[in-house]
Image 1 (cartoon, rainbow, N blue to C red):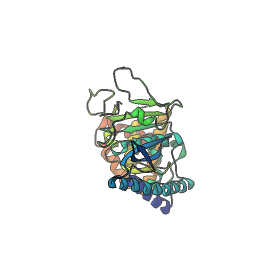
Image 2: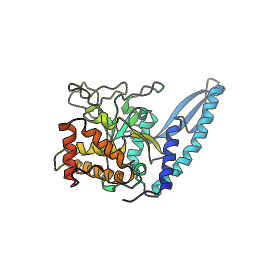
Image 3: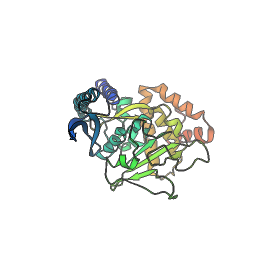
Image 4: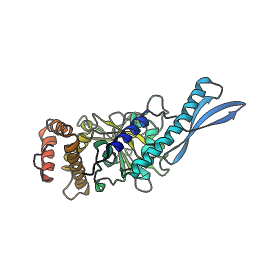
Length: 327
């Protein structure tokens, strides 16, 4: 196990705290005059585009205060970008440029206030959290899975479609039509093949597929076990730009969930091998750094049912040649 020095773990923890506390309005402030009245705007890079946010009249004290906050936060963002460069320079995993831009656009729209990033895109973020560099073979991904029970923009955000948000990362993003042409799309793909899937917990056998979240003009694919996976998410920061504030599943839950999901794929499926590799990697690390977290997650999942929970977990553990090991 290639441990990450405590100094880097602390630096990363500070980055996470700062990124999640940073206001959305941050960037360069400029003035635009309309009919003799000056108005202030904030301009910042979001994904791969420039985004302008309207602040208000330049002679309004409250607007001036927001403008000053935006200028101050722009300087702090520059400091965080330097921190990100240091962490990446020390070998901590970081998303590809394409994934980073997608996460930046989603975070800018406020979606990670309720949504949780799952899948390999989330796995990439675990190294500084668990204190060890995870195997690079399990980090490669060309998609992003967004899971939530209620995917919606915050009340103070403009009602935008998910397609509009994703196009700030890549203008070629388009929805992928489903079998039911009347249903809202739950998958979006760029010209390069990058996929964004919207997921939601399966609550009833007759749940619609896709389920229609509030706003966003997007559906969500209902999946079993997802509610358990995202029940206790943790804050993280993707090492892109100034550090993108995201939420991901607790590491132990992610690993146990992969044990379950692996058994739902065929033995020849490449994703099955990736699931098992990710699960074993997290289990091995947590056995050293947080063994009780792994044991508690394993026991909690196994207690939820035999056929859908305990049996696939046991089969994956046996397949990994570790028998009934629980950490």
